[in-house]
Length: 489
Image (cartoon, rainbow, N blue to C red; front, side, top):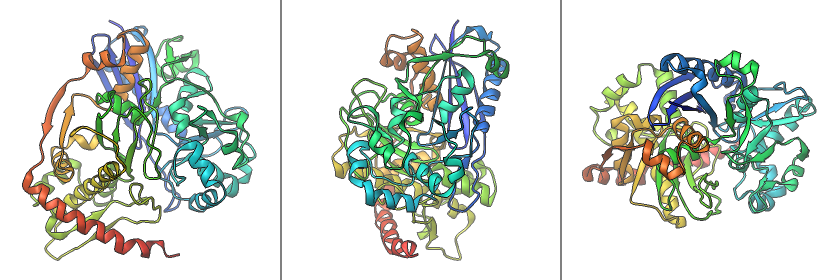
């Protein structure tokens, strides 16, 4: 039996999936790491933490599975977009990586909008905001000039880890699209966008396709990980497209609802839909795209709540299950790091509102879950308003999808049947892609047919749908009332 290994680097953890040529998962492993907040508006990660997590995951996978490492024929990685690693001439990391939830570049965003807004939208197809690499780099230039002057290489999260494994210096086209340094029309790095911040275009990595072989495991990395020197490594790509693929999204209209660090609703489309409130990326399926909307703090809201107020997820869910929909008027707005769709406002703040003396911890817990799901309703409403066609059912993905309670709340808020698959995380999608690249399956579609089955469907409760439709109006009204306050200097 031969195997492929997919490794994901998410917002708070790395997950590895070992997939056999029989289409079955042989072993999985997850290692958490920290996101650091040196100031209230900053979010950073230590690139070495990613590599340490990868090393531990690979060793654990080999030990748990009991296989011979020589039977792993291909390795592939994926990670969140936008997260740049800046290095000196010897590939030494110059500073922690700025994560996409970081808010420090608000001034740089406004500066770029004023000076190059039309150019950015024309070439990068997106509205400039604090999530993108372009303003992150401008922030470094303006606030850490000593770091800026030493930058000779710029990598992205999964590319940095892969560089540690193979020594290569490349990225894929979908990752490049997430940097706001890429010209979608010409499908190459944009000299004009680089010039907008005074960045030397020559220091950016070569762009390849996600399934291209970019190197092999080096002797040093083999010692670090337990892999065999010479094992093939393909480029890999971004986590969201791998989740969309893992969920079965390869045909026009296929939709995913994601309950992860961020909440995403993506639709597979035959074209891009440039719009200030949409995020457009290419798909790994030739000629396809996956335009989507996003709420910024989804599972990260629940993790923040858990870490701040204690208890396990299981205990929190048990309490929340006993609370009636609507939480007796208590509402949560998940704007811990501002918000994306539909407000595009980095200054929004999270809030609990409507608190009464009879509210318990369980009410607050359920309010968090409801608040995120209502924000996802805003996301799907925006897709409908713009006119992106989609199916009437969606596959629910992400860590939050494991919760039956949250799945039901989300189905009720969206008024949509949500399909649960056996496996939908991005490391699984990446492993399937590696399997296609290794010849296990002849196509992306064949891999899906062999590897992933439907587990269940969550059907909306009509009574709860009515409750949440009324609550959504209040939820939006609270945003409208508070937004001007947050925007005050």
